[in-house]
Image: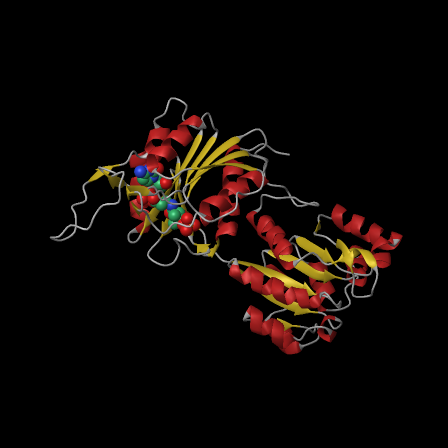
Length: 405
Ligand code: PMT
């Protein structure tokens, strides 16, 4: 089901960043309904926020039309999370003391939903004892915080006070909506520290002769993103990669290979591992013969190309004496995606399989819509950037195998 946040845009110069936040959340399949405070409207207009959110924007507690259509109680009821960005010193003070003077603060007082504040203000206002007391009070009341960041500010000073960047706020929102994180008061995903993860990514290249080969369009983006996301959660990650044009993810050991046979050997050499995620688009067949010299063009028609089957790396590791505890396959399908993925999970004997419809631009592209198929059923995730899909999968893995921080 689509998640929705109620975004309260306060009166600060960082309000413009909240417009980017709405767009970033939309890309991740999260809807925003927006309240702009009176101060906020000095910096951004309801028109621009409404155009980006695709929804009516609320500004006034005393607008009877709005109260008839959707009161402040209803606004918070319909949200999964309330986000205040930018949260000014004044907004924090009112929220900490239960002052309800306008639509935004009344909504905050009336809500039973979690609230994430992204403060933004002058460094001295942030450091003021009163602001710090208010932040402490709000944290004690269960509020979540992200930022502020340090840096140069619009007022010309330098220090803590800049609102966190929209993509970072979006990460925290996504994490909070997943219900498995606390960072600065958000529940953190379970840690994968002490766990080893083996990932395959990219295509394989099966040579015909020194200059020709069989391959596919896999770019490695999805596998690399998963390797990075698992490393970010503390796992010790080995990435066995086919030939792709991507830098090694940070903190990940990468082994470059060409053929399916090389990939299998590198995977077996990398065991034992707690987790195996088989993202590579391994060529199912390879030429039966590879010639040492370039094949000459025959006079009468194309040369015959005899193929033989490559080993199934995923199945081999599933049946291995050192089988990883959690084995996750990928199913690249163009039709009957879920049914085919279910059958593939059973055939390959992996624990989970991630189905993706590759009839569009998923292979080689930047986005993916994954369906996680386990023995308990299916979870469909909306189309999103591969890095975000990777994080979601990494969180599911951490939930299954990780330990609490
Ligand atoms: O690399 P990108 O451009 O980011 O694209 C990502 C992706 C589309 C390649 C990826 O998300 C994906 O779907 N990977 C699996 C591709 C695939 O080979 O699917 P399959 O349904 O043919 O194979 C099923 C599973 O068996 C896969 O986990 C595959 O890694 C594994 N396999 C297949 C054949 C083989 N010989 N050995 C294997 O291990």
